Image 1 (cartoon, rainbow, N blue to C red):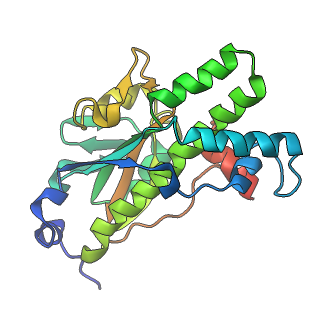
Image 2 (image 1 turned 120 degrees about the vertical axis):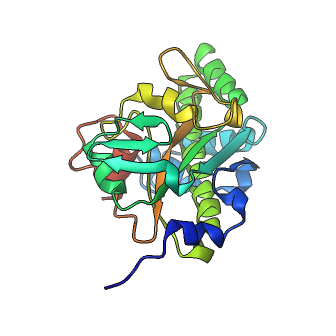
Image 3 (image 1 turned 180 degrees about the horizontal axis):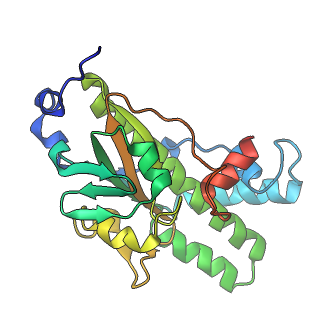
Length: 252
């Protein structure tokens, strides 16, 4: 029977700052992996079948986006002794998340978690809103869609950074999960952000727990020696208007 190396031994192999230290990055648009073809696919077109009107709009707006984004992402890996789970609950230090069965089942082998957040920036929100206010609905819609893709791709970039810290000690990651999805109440954003430094990545919360800037993402990622990414459980989730569900359906 294989004996797992204790997280105490694992953490001893890392610089002490890796657990409990907040990392924040400012990312350039050219550093994240998004192609024009992916943007066209999100609009509902197959590559090569997008009307010229939208091809030109996407190309033009992508160039404009370089001056509009302020991409900031970051994470903190909780010390292992601050994490445990119980059935449908995740406990991070003194914070108890009512994350639900779907997420807990995905994270049940985790020995700790990374708490993360990221945003496309306030200026991007302003740009998107201005387009709608001016009555330019095609460009407003493209900007809105583009912002969602940018911040998700930025978190993909962040996952690589997290993994770089885990590979030397043979730890792996689960998928990422966010409040508001998979049965996890969005109001638990307040609890999640209590684990991060104030004004982390320049993100704040409204009274209704929505993130500002709007094009922002936050959540947790399970970390452990035997965890793995097994695909999002879209088939059992009841949430219909979900970024991951839409992406899953387009890829299937």
